[in-house]
Image 1 (cartoon, rainbow, N blue to C red):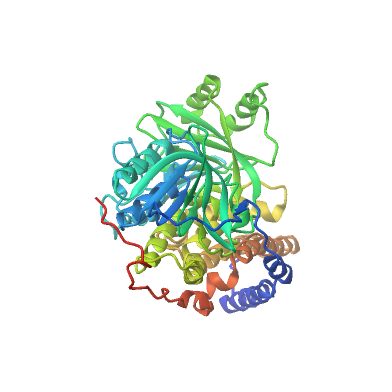
Image 2 (image 1 turned 60 degrees about the horizontal axis):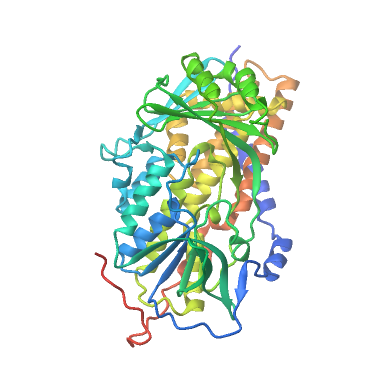
Length: 537
């Protein structure tokens, strides 16, 4: 029996549902507005005495020299700014995340002149993803046809990449001062951040002053509470392993296994090593010390991975180098503060499932660089803050697309006892397996090559409607229609709260936000009032 679906009925139903939900999430958030009015500074230190003159000539202080801090230091130093970077530990970091740079992020890296930082670190070329579910697999290839041959995703050891960027920034010796120290507080005077107080490597207390302080101290930031409204969520943890001397089923691809209870990732980080990240939902992890974690990995996880990786996976567990990392998400909710700015994971986080964090960071740095370029003088803190309000809106297309995709995909890819969620997960895998627009569109979003929030919503509900259609074939049943209705409801419950947290107006209607039309503050011609821009070496 052939069933014909009236596309106009489906379109009308979907459009009505979407309009209703959009009106709901657009309603004013009174509590949030009241909370913003009651902003208080926590990790700041009020100086009674007047701030001493900035005799060092520093234009910008950067707190932290991770991916965002190191890239920003090089970028501003290359543009002629005097930059003082204070990093807690200048030894090579050893992390289990921040190892996959999507093609969109690599293009931003090229814009910053930092593409050589993925050279000489045994970085691997990534050209797409492979998905696995219940013994089936499908490949999603990045749409790279319009780009140069060297444009692709890159995977590597996080620490090696950061050290390369630190070295490149430090080589701008006339403009960049890279110092090891621990920033303990921001120095605030009359509502303006004037600089930082920090402990040097030798334990001495110091103060540093600059017209602009940019906090890039990562996901565990202890300074952000004074600069934003941090709503940190920890839905799960990653358990990290390194598999040695094994071949992935698909070369030069990231691998995502839709396992139970949640996804497992594999991707190469060198020519002989494969990173494995096992997502463990919830706040509590099995103990590594007692052997519970090894038992969990062998009994629950190992049977679900591709057979070609099984032996290497078990060997990595037996080797004992098991690492864990909380997966944090935090929407950007800044308090525009004169003299200070947040960047990187200190400012905005998303679930690392999609590897989009570095793409957002690099995109933010390109945007901030372009906004600051016309300015020689950064000393008018209030005018600068007003001008940089545009930063928060202009970053939304890229940041919100990647943030929303990460949060939504994690929920869809995780196993659930709910029938509607099960159907959504199955529909997502089959939708991506269709090829054509159904795979190119989503992977373009994932790669950062097409940061379009509207395209994301269209494909997300395309998956939901595809799932409903499967339930109604070969003919509708009461149970199928009930699950289909719950599937649409579940899909709405996944994506709309994330979009609302990102800001509906800023994401979909940025042209209506007055902040994007801010003009650079007028620059003073008097040499005594302006900041000299030094030529980088």
